[in-house]
Amino acid sequence: MAFESKKLINNPNDVVTEFIEGLVETYPGLQYLDGFPEVKVVLRGDVSGPTYDKVAVISGGGSGHEPAHAGFVGDGMLTAAICGDVFASPPVASILAGIRAVTGPMGCLLIVKNYTGDRLNFGLAAEEAKSEGYKVEMVIVGDDCALPPPRGIAGRRGLAGTILVHKIAGAAAASGLPLSDVAAEARHACGVVGTMGVALSVCTLPGQPKSDRLGPGKMELGLGIHGEPGAVVADIQPVDLVVSHVLNRILSSETNYVPIKRGSRVVLMINGYAILGGTPVMELMIAAGKAVPILQLEHGVAVVRVYTGSFMTSLDMAGFSISIMKAEQAILQRLDAATKAPHWPVGVDGDHPPAKIPVPVPPSRSAKNDEVLSRPEQLNEQGRALEVAIEAAVSAVIQLKDSLNEWDSKVGDGDCGSTMARGATAIQQDLKKYYPLNDAAETINEIGSSIRRVMGGTSGILYDIFCKAAYARLKLNSQSDAAITPLQWADAFEGAISAVMLYGGAAAGYRTMLDALIPASTLLKQRLSGGDDPLDAFVKSADAAVAGAESTKQMEPQAGRSTYVSADMLTSVPDPGAMAAASWYRAAALALNHHNSKPPPPAPAP
Image 1 (spheres, helix red, strand yellow):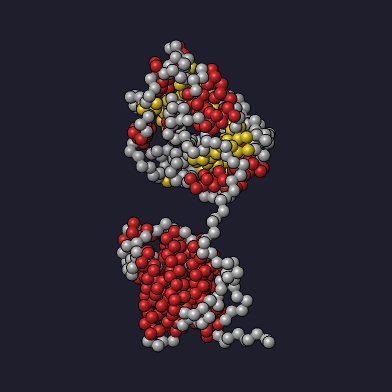
Image 2 (cartoon, rainbow, N blue to C red):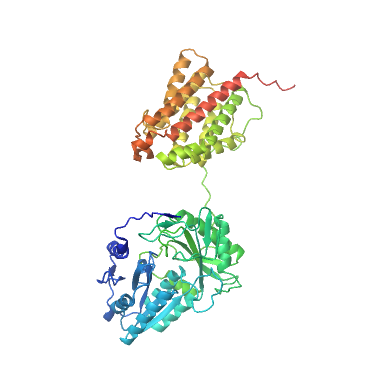
């Protein structure tokens, strides 16, 4: 099924030339040849062919794999990159222009991915250049490990391992070696690197409809960088299993694609197939974090360098590839050598430690003795009531998780329910182990500690402030061995809301959780001061909380991410934070009302 693709471009035919223009504006050390649209060559701005006294290293191919190859032009890496149209090999005239522009007496090395069009066009350009008197050698990279050993002349496809070959050859050339030695190092690097990828979607060419060939819930192992079919289509699996399968294929003793055995040292590259959104950095880092121990523990190799990022992409295709290179000392020296190529990663040189042990979390200076944080063996009446209210409140929040996320996806970042449920679950677990329920003030303080431990974002800190302020007010106004009166609870509730307003900056009518809590607090204080039954007052104030949360549909937001959402969208969705607050408050009120309507449990036998 095809869908119209969305691209922030002008004319689809101009995407490559406009990309090059933006690239050289961004990086002062880069320049391009004035031959658009036929000649699309990015080169070092400080290199002139006739006077260049080192081997020029040139690569290229079809565009759509950015930052490859133009993003790796710079001192210590590529001298020039030849850009074809999207997924199309560059023409011979363009390649030849690049050779002429940067090649001096030392000659040039062409690094070419193993695709028929690239081999033929770069090969013909090399022969033309030789006939003009240039010294030229060509190295073909075929690092694909996804498919069985090929028959015939096609060979293995060139993938992200090509970037490591660029770096090794560029560093060798920068050291002043002659062309034959630079070519020899590049060829050796090609023989010790293997790559395999996995994709969740296929890519979309500019101006073409988007197609989800894989379908929902599917992934493709061994998909090529142009979207060409891979080894197998399978159901999406956890990343641990995917990484393990890919590494098994690369290091398979049956295909013997790379000469890596137990005891070897290796370089690991995790390459995202799309820079923006296709494969988030978070997912790439998760894959890297899983790959290292699998390599060390299951394959018995030492990982000495890890490169994670988007190096050779495939437009908007979601997925990643893994490259493994045997890490001989000479190779590590080339990889660690300095370069000004803008998209080569920084901060990864130096040996990777065998195991990284997390730094211990420093203890709080005000931390209590663990013996204090324990559930009483026997609960008094206040402790039982507090337990009932807390259990009901957190259960309500957990049950509302999906609705909160749905509302928040329309007016925020979509994680309100998940965040609130994470805090509620922590409270639920800690309630059974640590809360000193017979001491209400300390229990409220520990609820804040549970929230602080697991709830991120604004809501987490605001609820922590809420609990800390209520705790302070309760400690000030009550005795630890005496039951807290309803008015003291109401006063603590009011103080907690005031603290949230003070530090959060919101107020009534701002479309936040305060629009549920403020009406509840106001009515609760009024009812109690007027002599109403405390439970009736609690339940009626809960109704006010629900009404206040629902009223946020008509409010113009003045705090949080909702301020960026259109008014039309907001009128159909209540504020998720207000709905969450009303939910736990109402659940606590109803549970306490039900609890107090039941006869008390019998006293324990003497």
